[in-house]
Image (cartoon, rainbow, N blue to C red):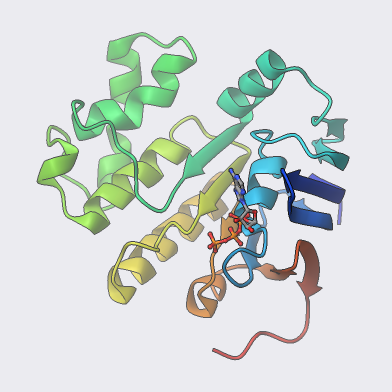
Length: 228
Ligand SMILES: Nc1ncnc2c1ncn2[C@@H]1O[C@H](COP(=O)(O)OP(=O)(O)OP(=O)(O)O)[C@@H](O)[C@H]1O
């Protein structure tokens, strides 16, 4: 497999606390990859290193064959805007904006005009079962609806990689399953890779492959799945 995004022997400490101690991980183009592991093991830190949000103390991060941990902040920020999408545990919608304005945000950030950005945002509402909710604000949406709006926002700019950190963590299990199905289907249709951080085996079961992070190191789980 040729990796689209890869961490090689990445280490990072927060002060005296080592969060990663030589973690390596490679995710292919179009692959849905789950990063599992106990609380505090370093999963989110690894995701942030892969996404160019955090710079490792040592080790290397590559995207599409290009080293990204050595880029300056402006170039990493441009990379995140142009090639990556994000979904977090609590959708983090902007409460003052309508659902369709929230979905359009990444397009506005990359310089699209408002009318064009909203026109591109709208088809996502039908696609994710959100028809009729375009003008609602986040306070007027259920948790599952808000998370689907956040998912649409993460995918609207057609990123090469979607980083999803506990995207179903705030949802009940049925709603979480629906969000995962929609996320994985959309990513497969778009050819988007997903790096999915979760501590729930049921959520990780949606992935093509998975790794477990323990004490700041990642181990690939190949044939054997973790029993839930
Ligand atoms: N900004 C920070 N400042 C100081 N320590 C941090 C910071 N972020 C993470 N840590 C520490 O680094 C370690 C790894 O944290 P990380 O958030 O990556 O774990 P995680 O596996 O994602 O955990 P969880 O499943 O609970 O979200 C933990 O010991 C955590 O306390």
